Image 1: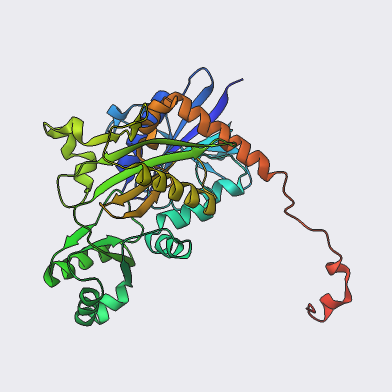
Image 2: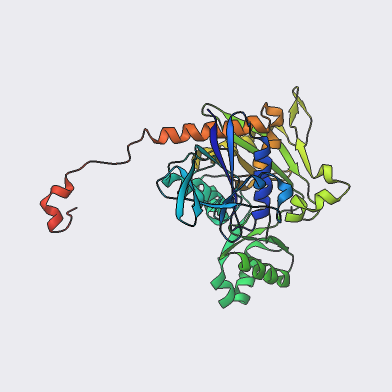
Length: 387
């Protein structure tokens, strides 16, 4: 019997369109012999719709149709909306999350599906929230001795009330140039390199249009951006190939990632797989020690945050240092291309994510979540609870 797989994507996020691309790629590669695919697109005006037109990327944005649907707490069903109210449409066996950013990758949707007891293919609430919050993630790295680029963070009130003083403080603390990042956005949106005080002021103004808090990092020159994805299959870690992200500017911008690469003669070189060793011989730009440390830090973070599904880790590597930059708990294209040499094509990777979601959800049912006590029968309840 086929499983009903709800593929959820879109939502109120600056990465909305990238989420559509990830979802359409995933739906194209899901095994149709095993799964009934139910696309659920959350529009930019926060409507949940489903329809077969959502399966094809060529239908976006103007040729999609859809029936409005919703989820209700404590129900495994998807409900259709009609003039008479709500009607059960289909039971959902597993939710495949293809969200990026706000309200999808940050723990919000994970919370809904926890309430509904529906297995989902990503990290749970805490890991998702920590991974999508750059400031909190930096604080976690400090506590577990994982190297990171020096940084400070500020909130919008500090900028608007004491701007000149704040600018001087940032420059004194980190020196210029610096990188300014909105706290919870991904895909390099709103990220700016500031080389002087004027640029720093403009960068902060832009970032505070997008987020309440902003991270400022010391700019690292002459570095490689090395990415690795991993997942835990229940018995072992599967590490992907490493890749070096090739950038046309000082930083890897949104345009580098998704737009300009498709229009340049070097488009096929935008992402370069970094095969560290082949038949025991060094074939790439990383040493054996760097390769080991990257995998060690990756496993350490995956364990501590109790991550689930496929997660991509982005590192900054210089000649003498390795810094963990950020993690993506739902990476673009689900990082499928990084696993091709690991015996996992996209279809097999999706099978692995769905199976893991079912196993993880089943394990939760074995834990004790309630406790029977006599406290409500006690006289203490009449006079206040005694500690």
